[in-house]
Length: 329
Ligand code: HEC
Ligand code: HEC
Ligand code: HEC
Ligand code: HEC
Ligand code: HEC
Ligand code: HEC
Ligand code: HEC
Image 1 (cartoon, protein in one colour):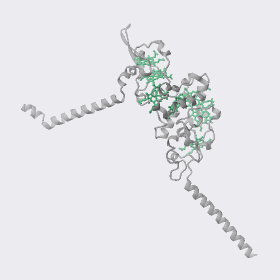
Image 2: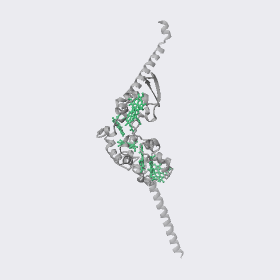
Image 3: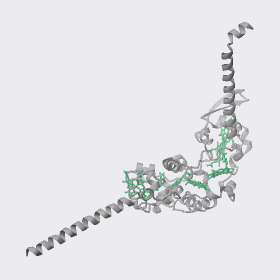
Image 4: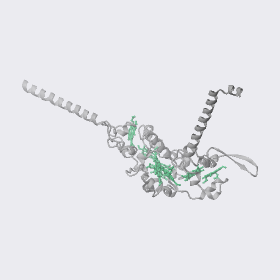
C-alpha cells in the first residue's frame, strides 16, 4: 500500500483520472455528434466500402479467395461531398432498391425507374419557396429538354450525390459562380457526359466565347446562366436555357446602371438597400467593380456641378470679351 501510494502520488493519480474523463467525454460527444448528424452513416458504409473509392473487393466462393477490382470512375461516390450535400441525411437505399445490398447486383435493378425531384418535393409547403413546379415548367421549355426530351433529366445538372444549395444561401458570390458554372462544365467541358446525349461534336467553350473581352475574368464573375437563361423574376435560379442565338451578347445588359445582374446573380441580395453610399447597385460593388454598373450618384452630381461651372466660366469669359470689344470700338 505504501509502495503504491508512493508510486502514485495523489496529484498524478488525479490528473490521470481527469485525462481519462476528458478523453471519454470528448470522444463520446464527438461520436454522438457525427451520429446525430448522419444517422445513416454506418449503414451507408455497406455501400461506400465499394463505391467510396477506386478499388473494391469481394469474396469469391468458387475460388475461395478475396478478389480485388477497380471501380469505374462514374460509380465512385465521394463521401465528403455526399455528407455536405442537400440529401446528406439519406440512406443510399432510400433512393436505390434495397436489393443493391447483395453483390453482384441483380441485372434488372439497373432498369428500375428512379425518383425525380417532383416525386418528393412537389406540392409540399415545406419546399414551396423553391418553386419546384415553376422550375419544372421552365426546364421543359429549355433547349436541353426540347432537344433531348426524357433523356435530359434534372439529375443531369443536379448530381444526386453532391448537389448542394449555393445561390440561395452562399454569401460568397464568387463561390456560387464557380459552383453553378461547374455544373454546366460537367458536359460543356467534358466529352464523355456530353456524348451520352448526342453524337454532335462538343463545341469548345473557350473558342466560342473568344468575342468576350477578358473571358477568364468574366467566367469567374458571372454565371453561364446570366447570358444563357431567360430572366425570371419569380424564381431564384432561372432554368430556361435558350438556344445560342438568344444568348446575351450586349455589354450594357450588365455594364449599365440598370444592370440585369441585379435580377439574376444578385437576386438574393436585392432586398437589401439597392444603393449604398450613393453607388448605384452597391451590392455588386461589395463583390466586384462592374464598369458602368457602379457609377456613383454623388460623383455624378459633382461632375455635373464642375461641368456647369466650366460652362458658366466660359460664358462669363465670353460675355466679358464681347463687352470689352464693344467698349474698344
Ligand atoms: C462488393 C462491392 C459492392 C457493394 C457492397 C455495393 N456495390 Fe453497387 N456496384 C458495384 C459494382 C462493381 C458495380 C458496377 C457493376 C454492376 O453494375 O453490377 C455497382 C453498380 C451499382 C449501381 C449502378 C447500377 C447501374 O445502373 O449501372 C448502383 C446504383 C449501385 N451499385 C448501388 C449500390 C448500393 C446502393 C449499395 C449499398 C446498398 C451498393 N451498390 C453496394 C459494387 C458494389
Ligand atoms: C436522393 C437520391 C439518391 C441518394 C440518397 C443516392 N443516390 Fe445514387 N443515384 C441516384 C440517382 C437519381 C442516380 C442516377 C443518376 C442519373 O441517372 O444521372 C444515381 C446513380 C447512382 C450510381 C450509378 C452511377 C452511374 O452513373 O452509373 C451509383 C453507383 C449510386 N447512385 C450509388 C449510390 C450510393 C452508394 C449512395 C449512398 C452513399 C447513393 N447512391 C445515394 C439517386 C440517389
Ligand atoms: C427521394 C426523395 C427526394 C428526391 C428524389 C429529391 N429530394 Fe431533395 N430533399 C428531400 C428531402 C427529404 C430533403 C430534406 C433533407 C433534410 O432536411 O435533411 C431534401 C432537401 C432538398 C433541398 C434543400 C432544402 C432546404 O430546405 O434547404 C433541395 C434544394 C433539394 N432537396 C432539391 C432537390 C432536387 C433539385 C432534386 C432533383 C434533382 C431533389 N431534391 C430530389 C427529398 C428528395
Ligand atoms: C442545365 C442545368 C440544370 C437543370 C437541367 C436543372 N437545374 Fe436546377 N439548378 C441549376 C443550377 C445551376 C442551380 C443553382 C444551384 C445553386 O447555386 O444553388 C439550380 C438550382 C435549383 C434549385 C434551387 C433553387 C433555389 O431557390 O435555391 C431547385 C429547387 C432546382 N434547381 C430544381 C430543379 C428541377 C426540379 C429540375 C428539373 C425539372 C432542374 N432543377 C433542372 C441547374 C439546372
Ligand atoms: C457574357 C455572356 C455569356 C457568358 C457569361 C457565357 N456565354 Fe455562352 N454564349 C454567349 C453568346 C452570345 C453565344 C453565341 C455565340 C455565337 O453564336 O457564336 C454563346 C454560345 C454558347 C454555346 C453554343 C456554342 C455553339 O456554337 O454551339 C454554348 C454551349 C455556351 N455558350 C455555353 C456556355 C457556358 C457553359 C458558359 C459558362 C461557362 C457560358 N456559355 C457563358 C454568351 C455567354
Ligand atoms: C448533361 C450534360 C449537359 C449539362 C449539364 C449542360 N448542358 Fe448545355 N447542352 C448539352 C447538350 C448535349 C447540348 C446540345 C444540344 C443539341 O443541340 O442537341 C447542349 C446545348 C447547350 C447550348 C446551345 C444551344 C444551341 O442553340 O445550340 C447552350 C447555350 C447550353 N447548352 C448551355 C448550358 C448551360 C448554361 C448549362 C448549365 C446551367 C448547361 N448547358 C448544362 C448538354 C449539357
Ligand atoms: C452577364 C453580365 C456581363 C456581360 C454581358 C458583359 N460583362 Fe463585362 N464584366 C461583367 C462582370 C461581372 C465583370 C467583372 C468585374 C470585376 O469583378 O472585376 C466584368 C468585367 C469586364 C471588364 C474588365 C474590367 C477590368 O477590371 O479589367 C471589361 C473590359 C468588360 N467586362 C467588358 C465587357 C464587354 C466589352 C462586354 C460585351 C462584349 C461585356 N463586358 C459583357 C459582367 C458582364
